[in-house]
Image (tube, rainbow over all chains, first blue to last red; front, top):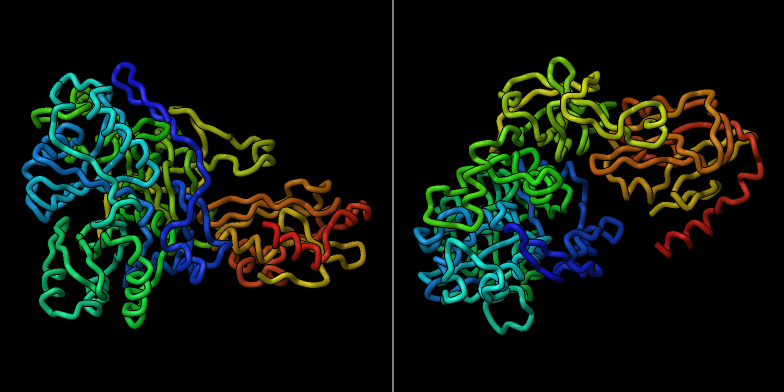
Length: 427
Length: 127
C-alpha cells in the first residue's frame, strides 16, 4: 500500500488479497449454499438466497435483512473530532445533534471522491463513521496520513495538532464496543424488531425514530445502535450496529421473528437492484468511477456545503458546481419477456439518435428495467423520451457490426425506448 | 445440483444429448444456478455451422450475459423459440423444456472430448 499526492490527488494502491468470509458466512452457507457466494470488496458474500426478484419484492412489500458486516465502521473521538471531520468531509458535522446521522463525502484536495460516508454523532466528542467496504483501507490510510501531516492541508494547517483519534470499530483486537452493520429494510422492519424487544418503551423509541436518527437499545439480548438509515430507498428501514460475535445470533433472531411477517434474507443482487430502482449512487459507478463523477453530477450537491468554513476539496467543488454539464439520471425501460437487459456502457440516445451519454448501472424490477445513466443535463428533463443502444454482448455480435463502445454525439438506431423518470424514488 | 444422466457435458457447463446424428444442446443446472433468473436468450440462426467450442447462443440474467459454446461441430437444425417469450424455462427445466438448439453433427469425433455424467459430477466437485 502506498499513498502520495500530486496536485492534490490522493493515490492509493490497494493490495489484492484473498477474499475472507464475512462474520455471517456460516449463516449464508446454511441459507444460500456455496454456489451463490461471490467475492465482493474482499469478502465472501451471498449474491442471493431465493432469487434477486423475490428478495427485491420482499423489501418493497415486507422487509429484507442484509449482511452489511463488510462495511467499514470507524470511530473518530476526542476534543477536536468534530472539527477534524468537518475538515475531511463535505457535509456539516459540528452542528450535528447527538443521536443524529448525516450523509457526506470524503474528497481529496483535487476534488476526487474517495468515498461516500455516513457520520453518526454518539456524543459531544464521539462520532461513528460508516465507509464503503471497498474503500475502508484507503480511508483509514488517508485519515492517518492527514493526521501525521504527510498530506498537507492548505486550508487547515493545524490538522496534525487536532485532538482526534481514529479507531476501527470492527478491529478484532478491541475488547469492547465493536460494531458491524446489519440492515433491515422495508415496511415491516419495525414490526419485526418489535418482537425482539422485551420492553414496549424500547419499541416506541425505535418506532419514533426520524430518518437519520438513532438510539442505542437492547434487542434479543444484544446491544444495538439502531439507526433509521439504509440504502434501498425504503421509507421504513434501519441499520443495526452490533458486536460481530453477536451478529449470527441477531441475524437468526431477526429472521425467526420476521418469518410470519415475510422477512427474507437478501443478497448483494437485491441490494443492487433496490438501490438502482431508488436512484441511489454506488461508489465506483455513479460516484468517482470511470467518469470521475462528483457529488454534483451524482445529484448530491446538497451534501457538499460550499459555504462551510473549509473542507478538503472545497475549491475544486466550487469549480465543478459552476461547470458540470452531465449528470446521473434515472431512466425507465420495459422488461417484458424477450427484451434484452440494458447493461453498463450501453449508449443513451436523444430523439435524433445521437449519443448523449451512457448507462452506469441497470436492474430489472418486475416488468420494468431501471438504469442510472450519465447524460447531458440539458437532455435529462423528467418525462423526456430517450433511446438505448445495446453494445455487443458477444464476439459474434461484434463481428456482425454491433458496436463495443459508443462516443458522445455518434448517431445510432435505438434498440429500446426509454423515458427519463424522477431522479429518486421512495417506497 | 442436478446432473442428468444420459447426456454429455463440457467444462463450460453445456450439455449435449445425442439422438442419432442430432445433438440437442442446453446449459446445465450448475450454469443456470450461477446465472440466476434468466431474462433473455439469443438463439443461433437455423442453418448456421458451428465448430467445437464456438459461441452459438447468449444467455442473459439480470446480472450477467453468458456465452453458450457449441459442444460439438454441427449445423443448427432447430432452435427452441419458446425461450424467446419464456427464457425462464432454462431455470425451470434446463435439461428438458429449456433446451437451446439442435445441431446436426458434422464431426462425430468432436463427441470424444465431452464428459459423461459421472465425470462431470467429479468435475463440479473441483470447482
